[in-house]
Amino acid sequence: MVLRVLEELHNSQNVNLQTTKNLDYSKFFCLFTIFILFFILFIGENILKKNCFLILIFIFLTSCFNINKTNYLIDSVIFIDPGHGGNDNGTSYLDVFEDELNLKLSTILYEMILDDGGICYLSRVSDYDLSSMYAKNHKIEDLKKRVQYIDSLNTTLFISLHLNYYSSSKVNGIQVFYQKQNQESKELAIFLQDILNVENQRKKQCKVGDYFILNNTTSLGVLIEYGFLSSEYDRQRLLDDNYLNHLAKLIKSSISEYLKNKLKY
Image 1 (cartoon, helix red, strand yellow):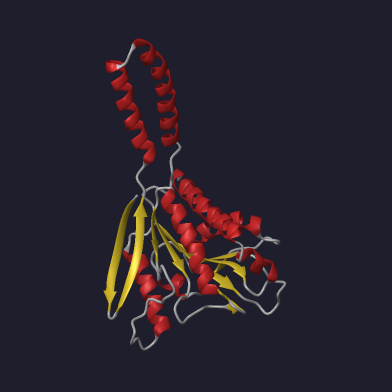
Image 2 (cartoon, helix red, strand yellow):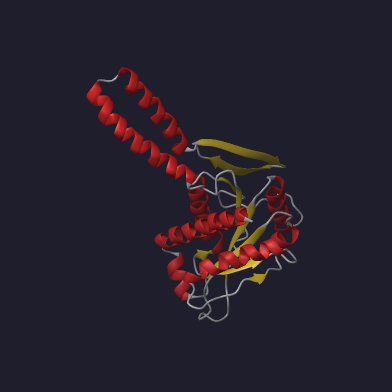
C-alpha cells in the first residue's frame, strides 16, 4: 500500500490530510499468473504442465472475472470530514463526545475506502481543529479550512459526519442533509438515506442542510447525522465497535453503489 501525505504548514500548526491508494492486487495477480503459466509451459514436466495449466487457467479466469466486476471506488476521490475536534467537542452526553465518535467512524470508513482501492482524505486524523493558534474566530477559520481542502483536491464527493441531540430521548436515527439548490447533492442524499433507513426505527427523509460546509463548498457532498446522543437507543449502538464497523461498511457500499449508478447515465 502506497502512502501519500499532503501536509500544509498553517501559521504555527501542521494540518495533515492523508490519502492512500491501494495497488490493484487483482490485476497484479493476473499478470503474475500469466508469467507462471508461461514459465510452466516452457520449463515444466508434461504432467506438471497438464495439471498446473488447468489450475492456472481456472485461477486466471476467476481473477479476470473479479476485475470485470468493476470497483467504482477505484480512482474516485472521497473526502471524509469528521465534524468538530479540538476545543469544539460538538454535542455530548456525560463523557460521550461527538467529535471523538465522528473521528472513530470516519477513520473506519477511511480505511474501508482505501482497502477498496479508493483515494480518500480525512480533514483531521486526531483531536484538533484546523484553525491557527491565534485565530480571531477558531470555529469559522476551522470551517473555512475544511471547505478549502475539500474543494482543492478534485473531490468526487465528500461526506461530513456529525451527531445530533434533541430534547426528547425518543427521537433517534440517521438523517442525511444535502446542499441547497444542488440537484446532484439531493440525489446523493436521497440515495444514501434510502439505504441508511434500514438502521432507522422509522423511515426518515433527507433534508436540505443549512450548514457552513454544505453552503460554501463547490464539490458534491452531503452531511450525515448518524444518530442522536440524546437517544439511549442510538447511544448504546454508537458505543459498540461492531455497530460502527457495520455503519461504516453501509456508508462505503452506498457510496460505491451511487458511483456505479452515476456512471450508467
